[in-house]
Image 1: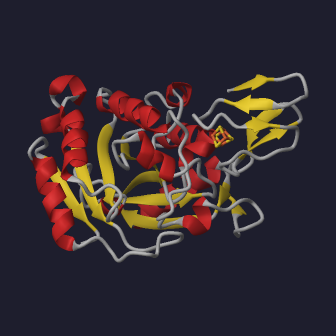
Image 2: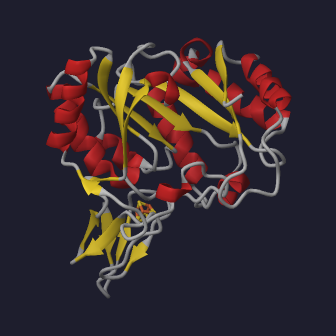
Image 3: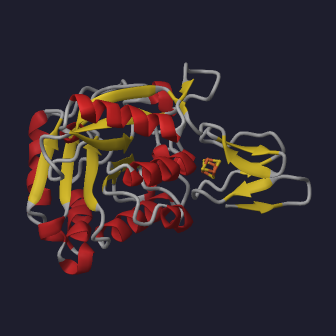
Length: 294
Ligand code: SF4
């Protein structure tokens, strides 16, 4: 997924940032690099975070409740949301954060060992940083997980080109995709490219129509940034129209509370009443709406 230029630079086509990478250069996500004329995921197998989590914590509220997933994360992200709750790893590169190599075989072995100890462990979740900046690891782990009878889940901002989703076709059993707001301006404040929202929408639309993948969507409500009722109306109404018009019944929407973090510490947490109010707006369109962090 790259296009070459005369000076040896390559344009990464993994996401709408379309980074132009001179030989040896890292992309904006800090995970992909032009290595000798090929763009490679330098973050491949470099694990910064590994934990057993209840699926509800992803959050996945309506997919195999009461079970656990081995959650794995690396470093890097193709956005830079000023309120990122995981900025220590999402905004880090290979020299900024400790990591250890865990091959896909090793990761699946760890998940199987966890399942032997506790049968409620059902699989692996790719989460914490933005997993799809290193989509090759997600693909390879998911293939092995399925072969071993394990499930594969994904937590992502969804701002990726369709070719990335093509590589994961049939490999993701459950996904929680962020829909951070419903305007290009909001995605721009999150460090997005002009097509980031469009790509997130395409990802959500595609997964919503895929019967092999259970889909949930999360919107973090940030005071003064995306807490208007009109924006939530538009967003939830769009979700309701997905899945052939069955989105109201099939989609799950998490409306969650912001806490000051990283570069956005000039305001307090979202008032709980605002989270509930906006969840009620979403409920005008969707049957399955959950509040989070309240
Ligand atoms: S995946 Fe990374 S390197 Fe590729 S375009 Fe996106 S931010 Fe740039």
